[in-house]
Every structure is written in structure tokens, then in C-alpha cells.
Image 1 (cartoon, rainbow, N blue to C red):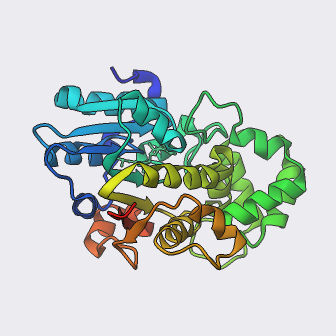
Image 2 (spheres, rainbow, N blue to C red; image 1 turned 60 degrees about the vertical axis):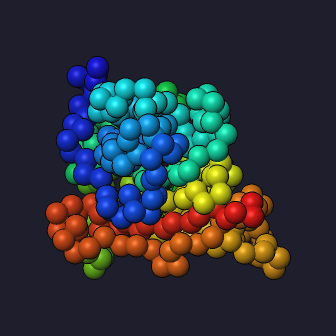
Length: 317
Ligand SMILES: C[S@@+](CC[C@H](N)C(=O)[O-])C[C@H]1O[C@@H](n2cnc3c(N)ncnc32)[C@H](O)[C@@H]1O
């Protein structure tokens, strides 16, 4: 059963690039697939339908509420779907728990779902008041509130600059430190609006700082490196790795990982070398990312920033 106190509405989530994901994964009858960010299981259900009657799917999510929702949504598929609570940084461990060492496809639909964003108690949104939480996995200790109220000004500015690509990070950090303690998302959003009032940008003044805090709380970029390496290593020859990124920091990691895993690793920048160390032997299927159509963006504005990249395990691996 879905926990009725979760305040999460599974109908609030529309899977992004739905058709594009299906054709990129190219699921075959009887294949084993992993949806490493199963969420409300929109993509997962379509994969299971495409691989009927005997295709198997392992769904993973770091958010226990999403896990419960996915289990309920996929219950009609019976034993064909298994959902586990955990991180895609440990995708091989979760696969080993269902006895898998290789798969025909892995989907990673990164970031947060609209269910999480629209749930005020989760603290992801600057448009509703909630606690400064932002943890995907609520059993984890550190929350956004801990960073906002306890980090030293330099480290706070560094997070906001690096993960939010926010040019006014220092100014924001100073304003936050002066206003401590900050109790909730609405208070932080109002402070950011006051601090950045004069800038011309079209995006809300809180967007970059909220993104930065969420990435830092969940250590998202490091976890993504680990997830990509493990997912690529698990693919059977001809298997596909399909990744949807929602901002340039994660898209760059995916792009570089795919590029370096599909070329000889000599002559790489030091920063990129560790990504190539997986020797994943991938072939690029998308040289440029696939973007949503104007119709999809109109129907689902959250899709606007989505970029889908696809790579395939070579037969030489
Ligand atoms: C964009 S949503 C996925 C939506 C899903 N494709 C669907 O059709 O409903 C991203 C999901 O990834 C989960 N997530 C974030 N980081 C994760 C990680 N490291 N490991 C596993 N799941 C993660 C989030 O909790 C969220 O449910």
C-alpha cells in the first residue's frame, strides 16, 4: 500500500520523452532491463508492456515513497517486476540480489520527479513552504537545512557556485549566514528574491541555489559517476544505456562518460580520465542529445530541459 501520509501524488508525474526512451532502449521479448530511477514507474510500465509476456524488470529508487508507489503501480505485472530501495551507485549489488550479472538495458532518468517537487514536506520546491530537507533517501542524515544553517560561508558559496552555476554565490552565502537560522523553503526563497532582486534573468532567483543544495545534499554528481560506470559494466553486448539529464552539469558528465568510454583513453584530461577507467566499451548511438518536441514541452513544461543520450555496449567488450 502507498503510505497515505506521504503527500505524494503519483498521477502528478508524466514520464519525459516516453516514446524516445522506448525506442532507444529497444526492448526485446524476454529481455532483462533495469530502470535505475523507477519513480512512479511510468517508463517501467511501458518497458514491461514492450517485453511481454516474459521480460523482466528491476526497478531501483533512492526514495522509499517512490518505491512503494512503483510497487503498487506495477503490481499487475506480478513476478516480472521487482522493485528495490537503493541507489543506482550500487546497481550491481541490487542486480546481484535478483541473480543478474548482465542486462539488455538500463534507464537512468535523473534528478527528481514532479511527485517529489510538488510535495511540500519534501522541501524540494521554492514555490511551496516546507522544511529544508531535499533528501531523496530520508534515512540519510544530512538535510538542506544542515547545509544552509551550519556550513561555513566559504563552503556554502562554493556549493552554490559549483552546483548551481550561480554567479552571485558569494553574495547569497553572505545573506544566508546573516539571516540564520533559516527555517523553511519559503523563508529561503524570499531571502534569495530580496538578495538577487535586480538581476535580469528569466529564471526565478531561487532556482540555482535550490538546485545546488539538492545536488550537494544527495551528492548527485559523484553518485552519477558511480552509477554510469556500474550500469555500463553490466550491459550485455548490444545492450543499451539510456540517460535523461535535466541540467548541464549532469548532462556533461553523461556526455564525457559516453565519449571517453567509446574512445581509447590516451591523452585525456586528468578530470576525465577516471571516467574512462571503466573501459566500458560503448558505442555512441546519439552524437547530439535527443530533445523533447515543442508539443511535449507544451503538455509537460518540466520536459523543457531534458536531454536524452544513448550508448550501446559493443560486441568486443
Ligand atoms: C525523474 S524521476 C524518474 C521518473 C520515472 N522515470 C517515471 O517514469 O516515473 C527520478 C527518480 O530518481 C530517483 N533517484 C534520484 N537519485 C537516485 C539514485 N542515486 N538512485 C536511484 N534513484 C534515484 C528519485 O528519487 C526519483 O524518483
